[in-house]
Length: 276
Image 1 (cartoon, rainbow, N blue to C red):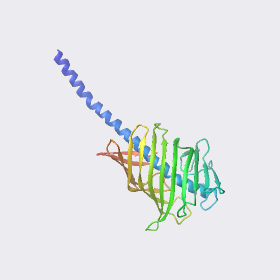
Image 2 (cartoon, one colour):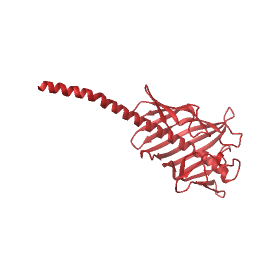
Image 3 (cartoon, helix red, strand yellow):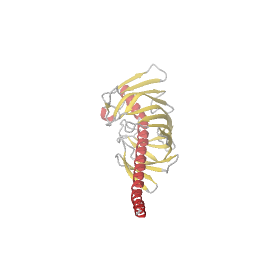
Image 4 (cartoon, rainbow, N blue to C red):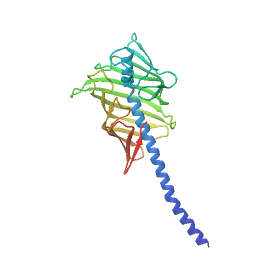
C-alpha cells in the first residue's frame, strides 16, 4: 500500500513539473516584454525632446512653421516663454499642471526648460534640455539632455550629437529606469523645407540602463533607427540589448511601416510587442 501511494505521489509530481516550468517560462517572457517596452519608451521620450524644443522655438518666435497641424508635439494648452536677455538664452515650455493633450495624441504636463547658444540648425549650437515635474502619458521624465550641432557630414547631411543622463518612472509598473546614452542623429530628409512632417532622421549609438529592480543592460543600435516626424514611433532599425546576467535580446522596429509594433527576439523565441 505504501509503495502504491509513493508511486502515485511521484506521478502527480511529474504531471505538475511541466506546468510549473511552463508558468516560469511565461513569467520570464512577460518580464522581458515589459522591460523591452520600457526601454523603447525611454528611447522615444528622450529622443523627442529636441523636436519639442525646436517646434516650440519656432512657435514662440513666430518664425517659419505655422499651424498646429505642423507642430506634432505641441497643442493649444502649451505656454512658451523665451528669455532673450539671458546668455545663453532660456526657453520654458509649459504644458501646465494637468495633462495637456498634444497634437501627437500624447498627454504631457510639467515643463521642459531649454538653454541654447544658437538655433537648432546653427552649426556648433549647444542646446541643453532639463525637466521640471515633466510627465508624458503619466510617465515621469527626469534628467538632462545635451544636443550639439556637428555640422554636415561627408554626404552633406546635418548631424547632431545627443548626450542623455536621466531616468523615467513608469506609471504602468512603478519601475524606475536610469538612463545614459550617447548617440548621433543624422538629418537625411526635410532640412530644406519649412515643414516638420517631412523630416526624417537616422539615429546611431548606444546606451546603458539600470532598473530599480536591479537589472542592468547595455544597448547598441545595430541598424540605424529611422525616425519620421509624421509617425509617433520609430519605423525601422534594430537595437541589441545585453543584460548583465540574461541572454541577449534583439528589438526590431520593422520594415518602415508606421505602426506601434516591434518584434523581440531572445534566443529562438520571437514575440511581437506593442509600443507605447
